Amino acid sequence: MNDASRPTLAAKTRLRYDRQRGAFFLLWPERGLLLNRSASDILQRCRGHETLSSIVNALSEQYPHTGHHIIEEDVHRLIRELSRRGLLTLE
Amino acid sequence: MGERPYTLTAELTYRCPLHCAYCSNPTSYDDRPALDTDQWCRLFTEAEAMGVMQVNLTGGEPLLRSDLERLIAHAHRLGLYTNLITSGVPLSRRRLARLRGNGLDAVQLSLQSTEPVLADRLAGRAVHDQKLAVARWTQALRIPLTLNIVLHRDNIEQIHDIMALAEDLHAERLELANAQYLGWALVNRHVLLPTHEQLEEARRIAHAARARLESRMEILFVTPDYYADVPRACMDGWGRRHLIVSPDGLILPCHLAHTLPGVTFERAGTRPLLDIWEQSDGFTRFRGEAWMADRCRRCEYRTVDFGGCRCQAFYLTGRLEAMDPVCRWSPDHHLIEMARDAAAKRSEEAPLRQRELHMVP
Figure 1 (cartoon, rainbow over the protein chains, first blue to last red):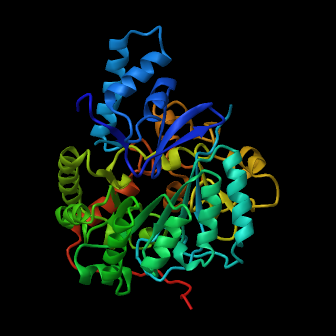
Figure 2 (figure 1 turned 60 degrees about the horizontal axis):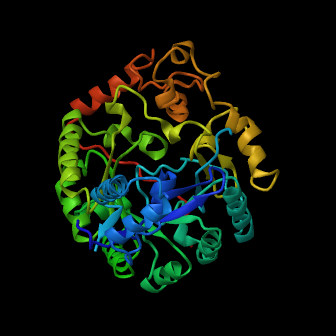
Figure 3 (figure 1 turned 120 degrees about the vertical axis):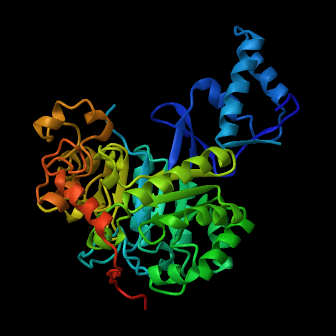
């Protein structure tokens, strides 16, 4: 994984907004993961078009009161975890 | 907010071309008319409005419904994640492509064994080659594939080969689902239940593979609760997460609930689905803790296993409110121990009683 990697959600997954909870879920067969606000902001950008560094930069703009390195750490941690679980690939 | 369903399992028909001796369908049922296309579509719409996000299209064999295309298209328009749970029989590549085109998100294909002869014997019909073809079409059409194999005494030792086959077929998920001894599997339990040694060896191999393959293939190993000392959280708890609908439209908390005597279930379309979920006898009977035996109400695991499986409790003890006998603290736990002992002692081959069914015309 490096700054030029393009994280892409796995084909079996789908992001879906849940009106009842007012939050996104990451769905795959017979499973679902409730996402917090920042996780859903990150995963909506994991379509294979954006690089890791551009995702971090976009999130930094979106959350100007959070330090860049904290955001970078969060993004990396989420992507590493989902990639380990096969829910996301790094192109 | 109270409980709300996340998943709708639509059992589109109980008919099936296969005869698996561990089928989880009821061993007998009223052959009432099945819901028609519009009734299923209305049900999907109502379920989605209640919070359902996924729909499992299953049976029996859902491919026997000629309106499957329309049902998938409707579910897809509602934004539901659609998962086709199938034996792959009967299916052509063209139809699979059409289902995908209508919005099908994923296919879960059953296999019986890696050995064609045993596979066809277990299915009661020569279908193994067709299943492999379906797996390859699924991959070629880039549809995410789950392979599901029900494990029992005759195939549990093939677990290495099963995983190799799943890798070869590029499955994204592999469900190694030990038979749960209800429905037809309970009828055949004396033949199907593996020994403790068989199970532990399979578990060891599956767990090692899971660590090795984690990022490529999700491997699920479903323990048969006969070899657990705590019950499984059947359906994640009664009326907590799941809606099951039988082919004739009964709204159920689990796929065998309507076989329990003295519990009333209601039919789709008779009143709003939300009311059935929240208020009906069938859904409220075993929701929460009020119904539980004293021992369970005091138990720290009551919020983990939700009192286990009601069908198992009833089918083994004859009492609906009994503790699930899988629980080590159940006064009926010896029923489980006796079945394990019998599995350990059995040496000779015994015949399986294959599922009898309404033949496909």
